[in-house]
Length: 300
Image (cartoon, rainbow, N blue to C red):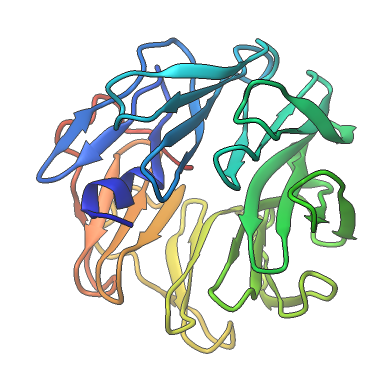
């Protein structure tokens, strides 16, 4: 990550008319004036910004900026259901999660967005919730409406083919990995699972209370942070043996995004009050939303 502005942009997108905001002492709009939602965002090491957008049933698009948001092109514009997740493998290979209106799809391009093909068709009302890339390959999580079922899929060939790793975790709302490839999955019911063998076996490290996990982040020390619906943020330093709530100062406890800059500086996104920051490892949070036109922040 090149600097604080780019680091923040990789995680926070504003769910209203598309607009990406960069943050220094306040937020400034660098985005696209369109009447659809920004659902997913990815920034490459070279600074190219990719945005997946759209509504539940229409306006599905992918936008690309190669100049820091000054201008945008639209490599994907099929007008169907919105793009719910996006992964840029390299300048040519990009994956998106979208759908047909009744079933979810994983689509891919191998030429930077000039052409797209369907790599995997999902089940009825099953949507892609997140992509994660590790040294082993690419993992994708899915969920069905109201949390009844979902899957973890794996691809070892940049998304050309997919195999199912598990369908026993319920609807997986968010997926994360640490630097060694350990996977973490949070589901619709608030459960958190981990896998140390590339998704073949999963261990529950948190039992939920029917409040979904909106975000997961893991720091360099292996500490795990989860955002729980209407409960704020919980942290574990012992792989889930015990959890501590770190929500002091959060005006909204429905956490949709967590970004860990280092061991003490964190950011959290909420659906009604924008962005919060802590500089003391979560002991106290303060709101840093000056300049945001909308306060609904999502996990890009």
